[in-house]
Amino acid sequence: MIRVAILGATGSIGRSALEIVRRHPDLFTVEVLTGHRNVELLRDQVAEFRPAVAVLTDGDVDLPADGGSSRWFSGREAILDAVTRPDVDVVLNALVGAAGLEPTLAALGEGKRLALANKESLVAGGDLVLEAARVGGGELVPIDSEHSAILQCLEGGTPESVHRLILTASGGPFRGRTRNELAKVGPADALRHPTWDMGAKITIDSATLANKALEVIEAHHLYGLSYDRIDAVIHPQSIIHSMVEFVDGSVLSQMGFPTMELPILYALTYPQRVADDALRTFDPVRASPLTFEPIDHEAFPLFRLGVSAGARGGAAAAVYNAGNEVAVQAFLKESIGFLEMCEVIEVALDRLGGHPVRGLADVLEVDREARILTAEAVRDGGRSKAGVGTSP
Ligand code: NDP
Ligand code: MG
Image (cartoon, rainbow, N blue to C red; front, side, top):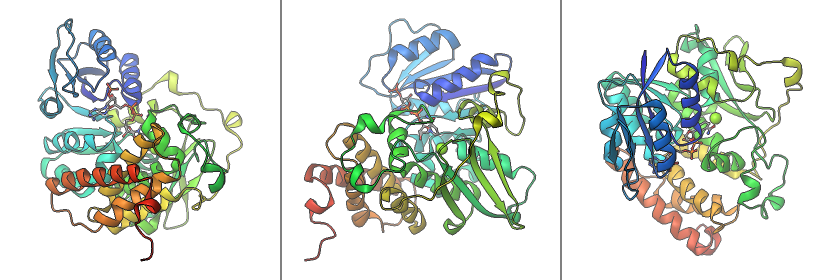
């Protein structure tokens, strides 16, 4: 039995993970479930899966009166105790945003396997995450479909044989639109993703291609390649989940109809493959045609901004990530337009991007300051109106 803690059980990835557990009751038991605000759903999940511990991380939400046989805890700190429990083998981190960083560090520091969906923790604190795994003996296995694809392509290969990673991107709902056309799009348009059904934050990130920048940074930390050897290409069908080019020119890819259940199952059981009838659906004819396009950098500037923040090192990626979280929420509330998301993040990057990072305290501080600066820029109506980057 693999004993699992699912952080963010009430979200899109968390619900898919529980679907996997439901289909494989002789393989997995659930020891911990966490939600943030959705107490009704968490209560239903607890009634079905009977974990030892249930956590609601938003301390302002009341715990349910009828919590069943599980022990219920409230607040952010409770999640750190839950992931380090001795009865947990695998921690599946499906929280959204940099809120996932401390649970990631705690799980790896305690020597757990971390099945990681929460890419923001690697983006904000990549070096710290790798150090926690090294010191604590934890094992980092990605759930993100692109990184799971790369992991699968790398099976049996040596690090020296890898020349380049090519991440695929669906292009999101606005693929093919010009920058001018994007000035008018709103949250309802951006939330309509053509190939993936996901939480709101990553759906907006997919529409701006910030998600692909986060994934380039994630790949850099996971696979140790320099940024000039990680490319991204638009592949609208989302069938090829990424590619690895080897030094001899051979290119391997991993394919399948889009579902997060497959990378979740793989991360939980890696390096074993587990039979799952529900996931064996592939049909190359139905998947055809497979096409590829370059990224339009003028229309989607958040991709390049994010990759350059990653390559800059220090605090820049954490600033980009925090600024992006604030920008996405502001866009969802219609406080700023689609193109202004990039402008307000640039304000924070200009001010904080050069800061060094020596430890967790620095990352948390820069994350906090970046949120304040980005929120101010949102109130000021974006970069141009904030007077940043204009000549005197
Ligand atoms: P959702 O928004 O659907 O779910 C997020 C989960 O995190 C919910 O359980 C939510 O609780 C909880 N949560 C929200 N805010 C906080 C907080 N401040 N502290 C603790 N918990 C919090 O997101 P997704 O499932 O779509 O994405 C989760 C992660 O996986 C993200 O990092 C995303 O980038 C990544 N990912 C997602 C994919 C997908 O297909 N969805 C694909 C690849 C990666 P509640 O709902 O109870 O408030
Ligand atoms: Mg992905």
